[in-house]
Length: 61
Image (cartoon, rainbow, N blue to C red; front, side, top):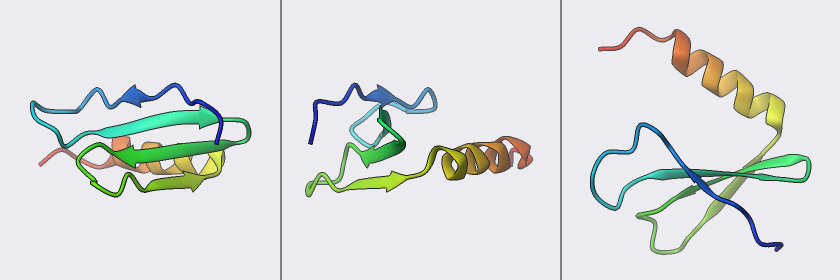
């Protein structure tokens, strides 16, 4: 796997549990920093954009 430039979520609170996102060629990679296995999810940019759009449209509770 090539070296990726990870960006920490701007909604990350204090502590070790944060979502990190990286752009890798034609895919988006997601990683949870508190996951000891360092599992990386891969998705298409269009699917990630749809997820972000849905999250932004959801009313804050």
